[in-house]
Image (cartoon, rainbow, N blue to C red; front, side):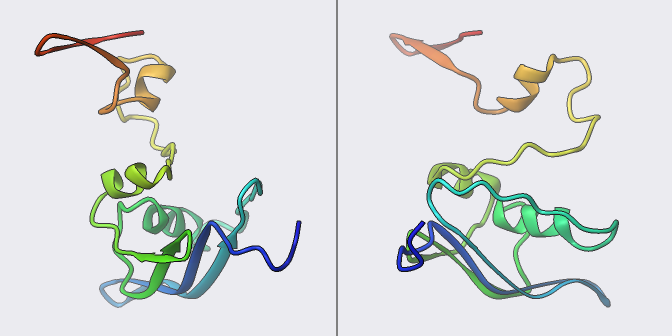
Length: 122
């Protein structure tokens, strides 16, 4: 991979506070197209918090996010989904009555339109 290629996703100086607790401090991250990235670390290191910032669930206390070189402000997970950024949360109790596939597509189930009706397809 060329080092001159612009990153697809870039986080600069991401900091996240929960009251007086610092969950992330000045985190920088670059992900290039076609790159597979694993985020590992001890419990409490901020992995889940970083992913929730990148997916729009949490707003960073400071720092900037860029997608394809353009600064983005993610107000909700829907904003990141519109960019093509997805996250499968590790919460086991999201919808325990549904199978895995339906949990993954929860809120954006595949549909087919018939006139003005949307019919779920599985």
